[in-house]
Image (cartoon, rainbow, N blue to C red):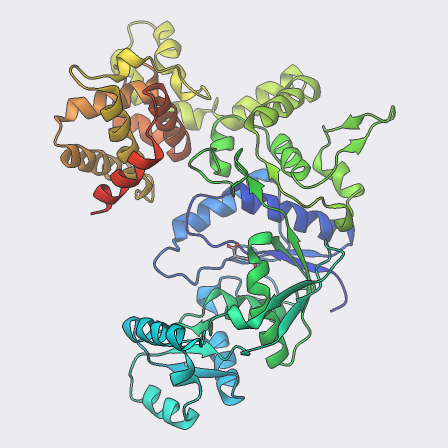
Length: 497
Ligand code: GLU
């Protein structure tokens, strides 16, 4: 296949992340620019963390942004299935091939054995704890596996030498020594592949020509290069994009910023603005006629001037204020009033959404005019929660902040986002603190609605959706003075137990 084929390969283990949209955006721009194809592949090899509900949200979020793919689990294509959990026999076949050629071995070691070998190895100055098994008799390994004893398949990493990676975005090749790398597991004891085996097999079988992904995968690339080599395949070209960053330049995390695409959707951002902003995260703005930078640029125009080589490395701080500014410009400059109205309808001012609010509001109305003031919190990006409204009688701000933090954690486990599960999660927090439930719900009402009274709490939280709920709780925690890092750490430990 000579035409460009690229992919985005998210793992459906949480909310649809803006980082996924960012990677998808550059892949799609590259595909469009070169008349190639863009694929969506779902990497659901982590059986405990992958959920269909996450996948559904992801697909819906990417579609909302207009990052449409030519092949994928929902649209099919010639190289499917596009969901890794449906390709297990393919991975096993390739693992068998690597076993047969002596590049991989069966490993039966328990975690405790590995740890003790590692300690012994360290004392002896030998880095790899795997020597015990990797140099054993392959036939014996096969026989043991055939008895049904649980095992993993590991790759036999070279003990010395250097992997040299050519990256399309970097002038100098990247060199990584093999010596520091563990014998990577390729096939887990549950029969699922790890990311490393699956990504190489799939990129090859799906005809991927360019792997354009986040910088966090650079250190994995030597393993992938070895696998291509051992399987007798040409490796695709690689381009590792800079990461999106928090203001302190750590990798963008949801502790500080809203990172879910659905947050931006629900809070009323326009897809065109979010895409534009994400493109600017790694690409210099266009020059206007007067030479001044023109940051506002819809995706189609961006594609027209896109050149992978011009991507700027270094990483960009994701700045919601700047996104707000850009979004405001699109709202004000690009939409006729009629189009603005349509955008509002597409967003939340539609029968579908309003119909869900009616049962909550009806018991609280005397005239039709009572509706809007009482349900404004469903339509606002944020609410202003006052300190005194957040505090139940006799409680300290510090404790209420900590309590709300545990609500945040508790709600993280609610998938899918349903009323009863939300109630259970909130009540769990009440038990943890041993507070009467009203001391939990008052701050919650205020955080969610901006005042301590309103329509039924759990139903409202459902309609507000997970991401807006989360951001309101985090905002309320700030109003209460925040939870220090140290305290959060201890709290998280107590909470987890
Ligand atoms: N499943 C990986 C992720 O979630 C894909 C990395 C890659 O593109 O190779 O980011």
